[in-house]
Length: 125
Image 1 (cartoon, rainbow, N blue to C red):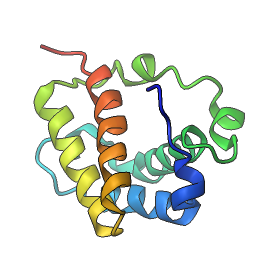
Image 2: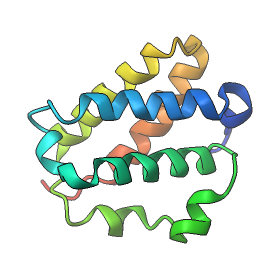
Image 3: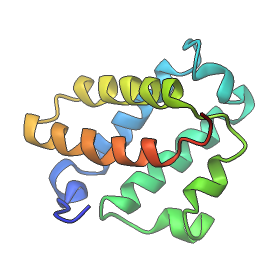
Image 4: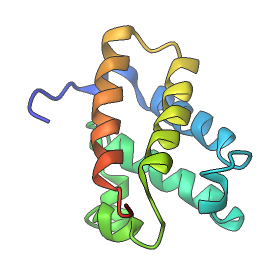
């Protein structure tokens, strides 16, 4: 992305973390995404996404300190991510964004930003 917004400064850590928490509340019951997330690692997965987004949006570097370089494609390769999984991930994530009442211009930015990442992670036809 070229014109990145300072999302961490605009939304704050609490809102970013609340978005991720809202996403993970929806995952276990979802017929597409639920099976992709090991129940015993939901808390860990939520922590990793929270720290990644906080870092990526301009906040503290906790993710890098804990995990090193994101290597997103490599880390997601074990999971069969097709267009349906990508679209459902976006659907649940944007529902969590909407739950936080994010301003329309920031919502649009988040949808483009997250959508680009989700598309990048597709690894199955």
